[in-house]
Figure (tube, rainbow, N blue to C red):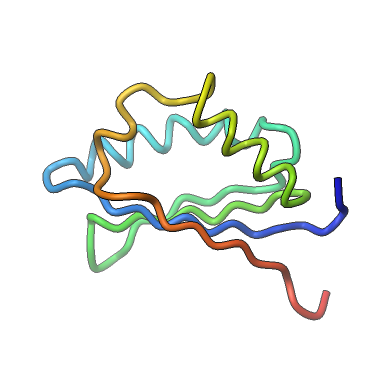
Length: 100
């Protein structure tokens, strides 16, 4: 695996009426994310102006670690009922730090 850390930004849109449940479900899933190999940090953010927008900022040891995590979450690490709380497909982007 490469040694370049990756910042993954995940933007989620919560279904109407599901904001509290979405926040609770995501918060409960964070310890498993943090424990996953290669996870350096994860922050869960609620939009201050729109309760239906949630963003995760995740730092991974490498893009390969991030991909392994996504595969795990799509399979055996899936959180029951999570997909029912959100509209559409999550928006993902990957970034590297500049000047470090």
